[in-house]
Length: 277
Image (cartoon, rainbow, N blue to C red):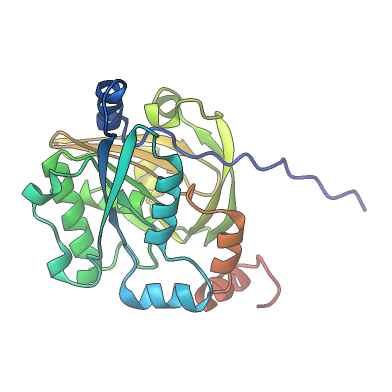
């Protein structure tokens, strides 16, 4: 029997400049001033209440808490991080108006266990919120569900991935020509791996011929053999949304805990990744 081929070492990378359009300008003005410049970010917790309860029962960290911890670690020293939260999957009252959104320097979208192509209030409210953020011209960043939200807000189709669930490590994510010159991936390797946990994706048919409706611009920034759109930049109404399909905010421990969720275990067994739960 031939030896099992060795996989390359992990090279997980975090997008570095998701809010550069505003934060870099603020940094330039605070180099000689005190106190630190406030950096006001809105974290959109995209899980519904039931989804959050399933996470915590499996020992996972909620998606918004994961992002809050990450943002606290990477916030520039000359900025004071001020975080706000909303839960649009829970209630229509969690939908901020365009004027309210304008006071934020950026909006961060978490992952979610919802299904983007289902026509249900928990989903459609979030798509509407993304559109309001575009109207407010506030920079948006999202991972996994966040990428699908940006696509849905732009009229780009999403669907279940016919290959099944990409869970654990997304291997061989490669920057496209657009991705190699995009500021979100400044300093990033051209090919890398990332933590992943998703079943839906941007439709492969659109990725092969990316045409947008009038007033919308979109660029595919990264892809791999499993998921044709691993990075996406969308521009609408003067607003921008940068996103990735993988989870740079997660570590391997959190991905392992996500695999304790019954839905994840059954899907992975069903598609032959594991022999049993």
